[in-house]
Image (cartoon, rainbow, N blue to C red; front, side, top):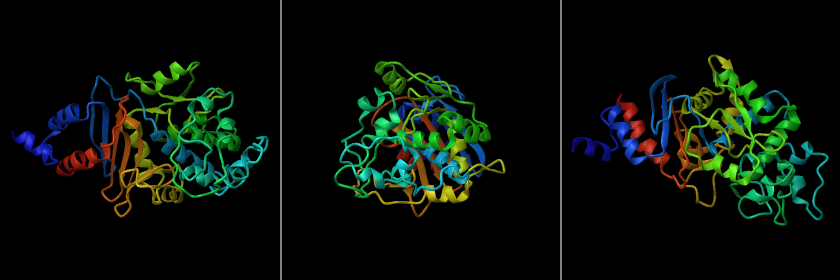
Length: 340
């Protein structure tokens, strides 16, 4: 009874209680890693996953591409977030009558303020095309113009991978390996390409461990809105990089200025996202406490509490509509860490 009361009160007395609580209450969690003050203080696995296994981290991929864009800006390969999208695609033929697309900047993509001529994500049209980037460009713009409304999208973010490739001459996964993963000690990733829609679906919803791969289009460009596979340990390294303002192992991988800009709060007007705000493809959970996170479907998360010098990463197999992972971390995991 004491164990049950402690759990209901947001407290677990030891690692065993936390392990069983997660197994019972958050059954799709595969791995969890916690760093406090730069030291690993907790690590465990569930569902027969090993510590080096990867899961598809879903939309948390977006937050990784934001870091890659920052690295490219630091290197002068991309001039600025104020660059117009079409500057990178001079051979793209704009649809007749479309005017708004000429005024869309990279910053619109990073902040989910891009206007699209579609409701929801046009998965079929983009993913069945020969050029996912240009197919995504076809949906940019519209008669309403630049409204600055928050408009969360996934598949059309492929434009960011196209921009990165045009600016650097490197495929998404190669750029990530060279300038982010290798400096962080993350195992080299490879492209993962499928031939059919069914294979695409199975990659997305499969529950078995995955390799270190990044889902890609027909041209080998990694999908920036989803598709990256990582272990919780490697996700935590991304979190530590952000916590320490772009520095890891005394090496500046991305500028502190970019981390600050990337995690600066911007209000989300429609209130459909649990009161969270948004940075550059990172969710801002608490502006005053400087808590932010990379969040993907199924409860995949890189949680950074700057005030407490804490990073918590959680990898999960596919289970839709997991909306309480941040609540679970704050109600159970953080109190357990503080009590250690």
